[in-house]
Image 1 (cartoon, rainbow, N blue to C red):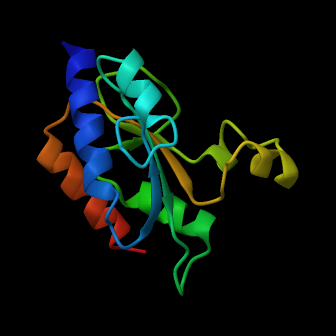
Image 2: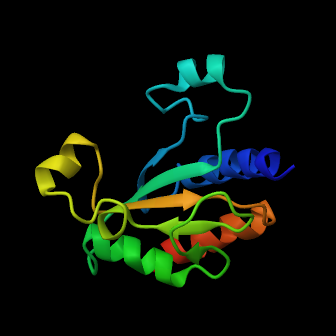
Image 3: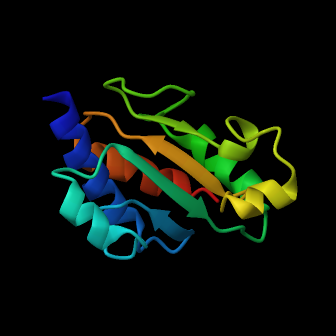
Length: 139
């Protein structure tokens, strides 16, 4: 039940955020814009609970500062590193999982300063979408 709801929520969140003016791109295998979308459609019955967004820098904030501001302003999603829970969690790879990589390594792996990894939970999807939208609107 949890995984099914996470798949459903992740797809809905990815679709909602892909057109946000402050999001540069959304990486999610359930979106036609994903480079492996056709393969994912063949191999998967759901597209998983992990979504990555890349926020744009603003006049006030660099990309990494903007990503941090978004994470800090979420009210439902929690800024923590973990996977597989029922709550939505976010982390910034350049501050967490990829913190020790040099710039050339980050570039090789496609990790940018504005990236936010989202482990989508089972919260009400409209509440979750609204949470990300209000946080993005703060940058």
